[in-house]
Length: 444
Image (cartoon, rainbow, N blue to C red; front, side, top):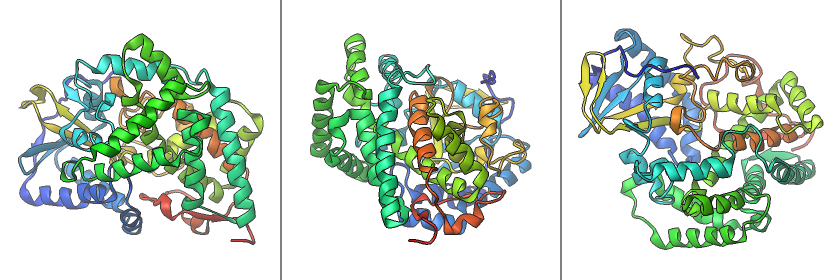
């Protein structure tokens, strides 16, 4: 990535009450309604019908023009929230993490504390380095292909084949069909073969995540969290070869960090990958050229699968799985001619940054090639796995698994009745993955 500015040359502008209310209602409200930790199906269906991301983007573009690209500041009760509207300001925020822009925000600690209170994502500054190193070592963060890729991809291939057989039998692929097969894959990849059918571990995590949607408004469930930790500790002790948790167990000996504090985040992150795969598959079903290119990579058997990875990244760019990227300042920071006090909150609205037609000539187009030729990775405003020093350490292993699954599923002859909306550019601003329902031609 290019070097981001250390401070912004633009001075943040306070919004009046009317504009603040508009941002709260048209930008932040739909994001909160859909759920930050677990998507709410009814809310995501409503968001697609209303194309809420398009309305939010239009408002934020108007504000950027009105204020010459400066960040805008709104008050939410006692909290001051700054929205950067320029990619350079986004870069300054991400490059300055974790200090002075901490990812361990008040809201994030309240939410993630329900199921992963020791996650590196919300760790205090003194504990972050050791936990980050454990993540990087176990997930092979620096490598495009994980050292256990053969075992991980074998799990993907097995579950993809079983899922395709079921689709061939029933004639239908939808979220209720896809999700169980996907979670069998994830449990095998993360925890080992013995976890393939351990539905309880992911059911407990799902229950805790649903509570986390309400952050500090929902009481904690310590017994469930203790059960999740006990189950994960059992898998750490097994350390099955070919699983990510086996590498976490090995890293534990080197780093002195309990991997059980980090594993819930890995499972949580894969949930977003499932949504990205299904959306990318929908585009492939609507565009024969995309489908054929994915099928070619599936036939090649290559671990890299560059186009499939680019397609997953493009799915996340077009329809972000992290709706908003949050930071809290740990000290006073200077932005233009203004000093913002420590404790100021910042929020990057992902859909706006990813679909900025004034910056990107492919803003509303399907363009995996932008990830292959380096254009997308060179842009600080594109953050499918966040960015800067606290970017997601699991990016490459998620892309390895999700890309392979997408390539395998593209081998099926699937039709998406609503595919006409995806067959050409511009693509819709909001896409409810729960509502995607494919069928085999002539059946379903």
